[in-house]
Amino acid sequence: MRRQIFDEFHEEFRGLCRSFFERECVPHTEKWEADGQVSREAWLQAGRLGLLAWDVPEEFGGAGTTDFRLNAVQAEEFWATGTVGIGLGIQNDVIPPYLIDLTTSEQKARWLPGVVSGETITAIAISEPGAGSDIRSIATTAHREGDEYVIHGSKTFISNGFMADLVVVACKTRPEDGHRGISLIAVESGRPGFERGRKLDKIGQHARDTAELSFQDVRVPVENLIGEEGEGFYYMMRNLPRERLGIAVHGAAAAQRAYQITLDYARNREAFGTPISNFQVNRHALAEMHTKLQVLQTYLDQCTVALNTGDLTAAEAAGAKWWSTETQWEIIDRCLQMYGGYGYVNEYEIARIWRDSRVQRIYGGTNEIMKDLIGRALGC
Image (cartoon, rainbow, N blue to C red; front, top):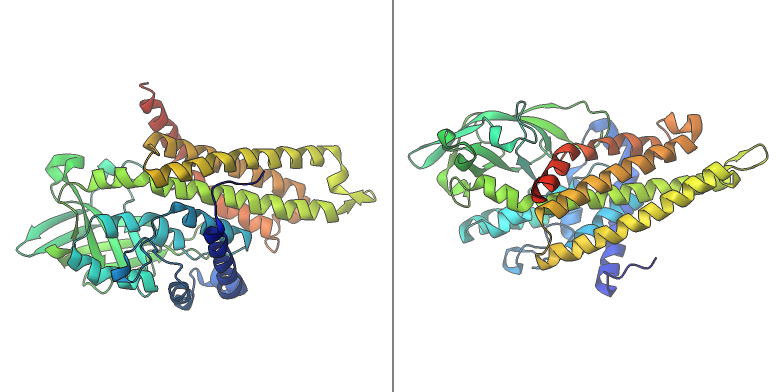
């Protein structure tokens, strides 16, 4: 089914993304998987090519183009090329609304040029050892002393955390006010008391740097406050739909990659003297996956258009994240099964896609939380 949401500009951008991933990322897969992080040179090259933070206004080095279709194209090419690790989704899907919409002119001039060039890798630190999907329960605090905030606490499961040069930290500036006391404060690397813990030893996404962060009386100027004090919870609630749609788009793209390589494998792998795609059980499975992917993609395309027009609701984004990642897992798991024993061997790409995809149903808010959000929107 031909997709209707892209024009010639988006297809040119698709070619640029594909070329970048094929040249600058795919050849380094094994090294990045072993190192547990990607190279900074890849980030810098992405910046040179205009593949970072294109939402940023031109005066600060960006393209001034707010179009989530570009984010979708980049995610699709990331998976279509078999790329691993590089956390462009954080830089492009998650961070821009915070650093563009909520910052002062001085903050923009200080931070945005590096974000666009790739010299400044970003992260957002929300999850804590005792608070994952329950943002209201974060324990990290920031109290004001004169012209500084003093931050104390710890964060975990932070994507880009080990390499990040600038971290947007959710903390309580007024703990007595609960979620109404949460603020967002930017912390630059190198601040005394800001430490990176171990890189987490994850089931999958081995090339994606995911870290624990520690803030031991870290002092930052009050000028690092993002937006208004005490409004952080509401900012995050406003921006989470964009993040969740990004996860949903990645889910569909990962499933499409798994399906495509499995279709190729099934056409060429023989058993009992015939390609395994000729067996009815496999032919039907491939037909089901193909159809489910088309249905999913059509829905996500409409969500992308709705986000661009400001019409995507929090419940709709939650539904997209839940449905996409559940479908992603169903398809990828079925694809691995079709490989037989080879599917469980790490040298086959399907094994990596399978283990890298499991977390999609957890981060950005667990799928159980997504269904609860949808239910509440229904008045239940």
